[in-house]
Length: 591
Image (cartoon, rainbow, N blue to C red; front, side):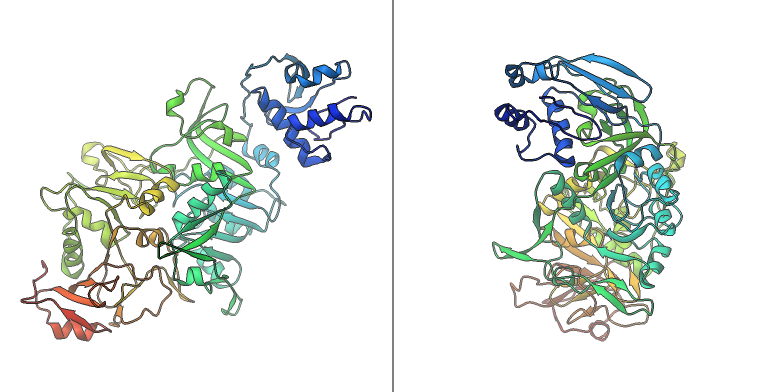
């Protein structure tokens, strides 16, 4: 009998008089005795080498051949004898390596460039690729640029990423190169070319809540086929019907199918299947030659989640050091998840929204918008953990009441958001520290960073006390619409579906009417919902409503505060639903 293990992945185990020995050999390799094919050869290679704590990297070794013709049958029961002599043939070296039981030999996973890594990944047309990054932070620029410029390379790809980036950079280059058939993302509002391609039928777009994308990736990495999440339950997202593709004439050509749901303890949850990409692109701040990765600030985002999920993982790092130079406790992601590593050559690290302050001060916000912002800040209570949405809600952090200390969370991976960087104090905008609105920020003392899946675990698990966010419409029963105007506006739900479905208190801060004067507070929302019966309080430029979303007091809205110079009749005229009024004199909002 002779067993050859080669990187051509062909197995020969041919002695007909040794069926028991053959069966034991294959059992040790994790294979069925009846299987002799390419995929099982890959498993055989991985399991035999991992049994001996040996990693042969395809970046360095092009072939491995082991001959056992001289071994006795008894030796086949001892892996240390089976692996006593392995000949490794690779790129530029050939040597004989003595291997003993419990001996570990560090092998480099570093490839010479992105093109080599892409070729080794086996990426082909029609594959699914998970790409790390949030906005322009933590984007694997080198790998994306190489794939975008790969002539006659893979096309018709499905890309899964938290956001769609911007025109002419990162993912934007993939769209412009015509490489992408479908995009799975939570927020695409900043990419104008992307939006044009969607509404003209050149691109399919599957909008998925940000936390759900991260959780589906993590589930795949954990070997779990599906998860249950409250995000999107009771909305068009779960019920189906969101446009996936438009025709060239602007008509809807393809819509999403209904997602299965299940009730637990009286609450509806959406069944979401694990997202297992064929290849993942990951960006790290630092790595060692064994593929162990370190991230920095909010640039971690979904990079670790993409890494654990991918069948093949390509990582790029700004700095690569030798194995052993990183302390085990500073490593964020084990090299077990990384197949090939490259030096990040393209490190433009654009800043999408550079925001700065002077001596810690930000210009005062006045008028109707200022009234909303200042009133929203009164919702902060000492010791709260708070998530603030993009726009008006974020501005409220500039008006935290005296004596109140809160910690702000950004769903892209930071607890402890501080003020905008102050150049007068030597601070500069840093692409690795941004908030959910992609604005530059500084971390406070005691801040912590983490990946996207952990961030949304905090949210879904009820560890965030208060969520303040904006919206397009709100109903009298607390339904919220905030992410999509069919045929007109494509933004995406971002992390809003996860946030509003969590146990935290939800405050909506928005203008009372639209730009054309039409009401935004309705008896029933006309736009696709972000969440059903989720809003606890509505703060507008005209008034403050409490929302009885759980129907504990008969349901509906109650007017509890009113703006100076605004009458109850004014509020009624601007509100397309009935409401109750608080007993006694109505308190005034701060002007």
